[in-house]
Amino acid sequence: MTELKRIIKAGFISFMRGGSVSYAAVLVVTITLSVITFLILLQAALYFSLDLIENKVDVKIYLTKGAPEEKIMLLKSSLEKLPEVAQVSYLNAEDNLKDFRLRHSNDYPTIQALDELNDNPLLATLGVKAKEISQYETIANFLKSNNALVLGSISIIDHTNYYNNKLVIDRLNTIISGAQRLGFLITLLLVILSIIITFNTIRLTIFIAKEEIGVMRLVGASKMRVRGPFMIEGAIYGVIATIVTLILFWPVTAWLGRNMTSFLSLNIYDYYLSNFFQIFAIILLSGIILGVISSFLAVRKYLNK
Amino acid sequence: MALDNVTVTITAGEFVSIVGHSGAGKTTLTKMILADVVPTEGTVFFESINVHKLKNKDLTKLRRRIGVVFQDFKLLSNKTAYENIAFAMEAVGKTDEEIASDVPHVLELVDLSHRLYHFPNQLSGGEQQRLAIARAIINQPELIIADEPTGNLDPINTHEIVQILKKINDLGTTVILATHNRGVIDSVGKRVITMENGKIVRDAKNGK
Image 1 (cartoon, rainbow over the protein chains, first blue to last red):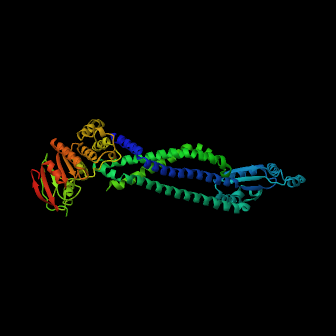
Image 2 (image 1 turned 180 degrees about the vertical axis):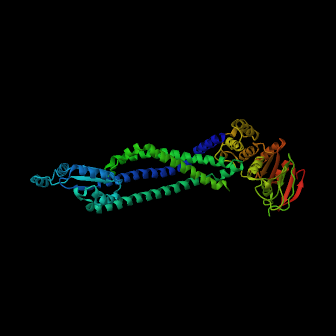
């Protein structure tokens, strides 16, 4: 217990006396943590945009004119039972007409042409949203298959727009999975790079204390008594760097929130504030682990001589 | 070969000076007592303990019974005089109360009471060596090994260091002093072992 107290105290004193060395170490850890924070926000923005794009995709099932309501509802509920389906929305012909008029309210020729007709030319539709963009094919196959026939609902399906949309859906699917993979690779690469840089900086700070380590051993100090204060110092680098990083990101995210929200379609500032504690926990833990483990490994080299 | 067929017995409470040119084997001899250097042949006994048969843990225990002073002081440069001594006491597990009462006492013994909160680089060479001696004796070792303690010091400081070592010896601690400086030996006036090329060429009881 006294041992632990002494180690912690020695760590703090050595940090305070470290001067420019402590300053440099905190700076480098801050850079690493900033990279990690930046990547968290980037991933959030990326996933949010990809989600948004995914949500714009759906498959519309156009139903035959005069299809009985109960059959439509039966098809809807059987679609909803599919594990791949996220949502099915039913719009009858009148709804679609209203919607169409609204969308083309500035397009007089079209509206006029529509007014010429006595009948509603539009069909009732079922809009199907899949959980994953790659699952539309399964759903399209389901609609063609015997399952639908057994339910007797193939007769009410006029056509689906899946095969029109197939090209777009496939391409989006490739882009999204590619973007996710690329994002992950870049994240991994940057994190590894900054960890290497931090580790080497901390190693340099301990290299300076190489002689001290030898003298401490000579005086009869146990390995833990020598190593402990360096590990505490590493943890202090992590804690201070965390605080600096989180303060730095306040104005940065505020600026991004004000100027980039329409581009990213996500308000980074709101995201930062609402996830503050998760980000804080991730950054703090990364900082402390990075500092402590780097110190531990760096001291080991001189301890075992 | 740094040492060649050396046999020497030092009894408790003695003050032994080992003299010889650089490379004569003085440092090797002291390092063998600390089990820092292993002899190719022969044994080294501390009391009845064969020091080269000790396991790591027991070796640490043995080293705590021996205080060492070096030519280059080997102080902790980012700790104050007080903390340097306190660290040596912490290392052997002394309580905070013991540290608070013993450190000022030992610093007074080496005349550094006014330098408690100075860092080593704020002290003169003589003061640094006195601090190193204070650290070596703080845990009441039975033996002090001083390897060229005055090598970096001027004559006045050298004299002071020798006087301190004699005082420690008077208090009952065995002292082994290795040096190449004849003047130091003369001012001690005790047993002198002269070494040359790894051999003991003279062992004089009354220091010349």
